[in-house]
Image (cartoon, rainbow, N blue to C red; front, side, top):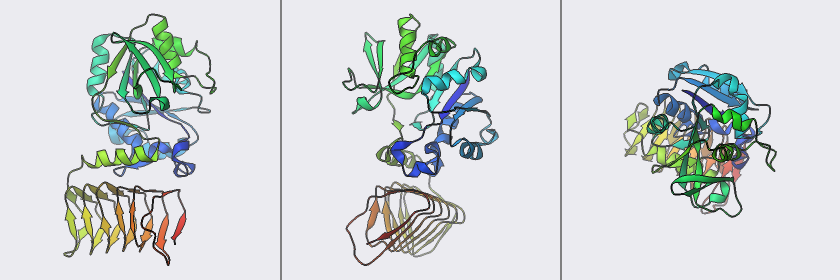
Length: 354
């Protein structure tokens, strides 16, 4: 069995962060989202992985390399444009050949992994296994309609969903999917939709097996989802203090302080992670906050946020929360003091708080 990870999309819902970075490389608990997908596939004993790449392909290659750090073999498959999930399957045929494979959307997280799901696919001897989850806003997803436990219809982002069962971004296929992707036509979005390809399998009497997942799953395409994913993954960390914490500071609960980090006259309340060579001075870092490498935070309060590398946050005068800061962002206080800030800021920005 092989793995296919899609890492080509433009990430419009996370702009301006994704103007300068691949959305799959935005870190959750200081680890790029894409890395969780690679680990999930590897942990299911799949070692041959293809990654679909687009405009941010060089950045993805630089971050992932040949896969040796995970003990897997990575093959990069360029996609000329984001022409749909089924198009990604189509161009991966030379890599997949006639093997079964798992397709994993690179901006998705499944907390409990996919080991059991892969085994279920093998045991059921089906042509396709789709993962489904009950969601509050199914109109934003591909939606499945079931009858007596069987899939009867799939619709991509319907205006009036007939169920609340959304397609989770992980699929298992055998070679029959290539018949489907070579027959279907582009949708109104001018994309080859994976929902249309799977609907083709259903209509042609191939066996499409649904699995409704019980555990936590998140599509991290929006800010609020990314922050929730960060919160969930931080709950799983184990306390580890490798950096320098002075006697005045308090580090409470499940907190990781990486080597080279310095904590002075501050309180860190977990779960939280502080990256390499980061300095926290006279500040409060609250629960569910990830601070990446080489960040300086001084005389400030931050909670439930993601701070990327090389940022400077100085004397902001009010607590920052529900925030995602891109790399090399500067945030500092001016004369007046608003009560709170909610920010989503792209790389290489500078903000003067007024």
